[in-house]
Length: 215
View 1 (tube, rainbow, N blue to C red):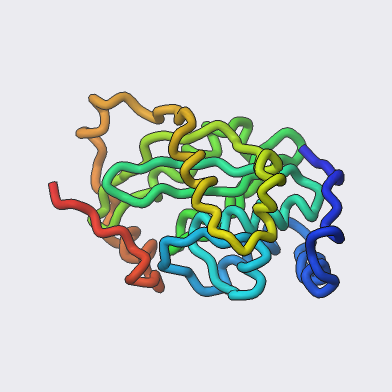
View 2 (spheres, rainbow, N blue to C red):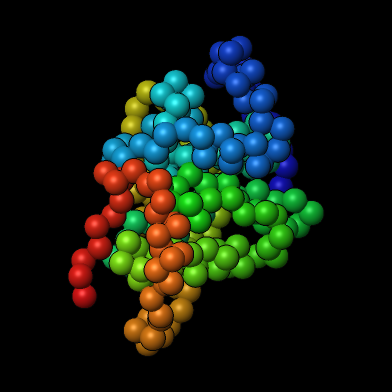
C-alpha cells in the first residue's frame, strides 16, 4: 500500500516539507493531531491550512493524516463512518504487512489511533464500535464506506487549496456504506458504561460536541 509517486516539492514550501519530515511513522502523525486544538467549526480546510492554523476537526484531521501518510509513502486513504444521533467520523488508514491501522483526530479520547493489526477494513471499523457513543452513552456507529483514495481529488489540489473542501464530505455522504448490524439489533444495544463515557469526553471542546436528540 506504499507509493512514492507524488512530488510534494511542487506544492509545498521548504518549511512545509520539513514539517512533514518530523513524522517518522504513523503514530507520530497521531501525536501531532492529539496536540493541536480541536476545531469546532463546520469547515474543511486543506492539510496546508492545518499546518498554518495548527487546529483541526475530525474531517480535517483525517485529510491531514492522509497527506502526512502519503509523505511517508502510503496511499492517501480515508474511511467514512456514519452514526445515528451522533457525529460521523472519518479516519485515515494505512497498511503494513497486509494489516490495516488508522490515524484520526477526534473531540473524544477513544476514536483515534489504531495499530496495524486488523486483517480487513470491517475489523478495523469494528474496533471503534464499543467506544463510539454520543454524550448520552448511546452506541451510535452504524455503517462505513470502502476506502477512498484521495488522489482522485488531486486535480482539485485538496492538500494545498485555500478553498473549503466540503465537496469531499459531500462525496463521502453519497457513496455506499456497509451496514454494521441489522436494524432489529439496534434497539438491543446496551448503554455505554458511564465511567467510560466520562473518560471519553474528558477534555472535549464543548462547542464541537454533537447534541443528541432525546429518545
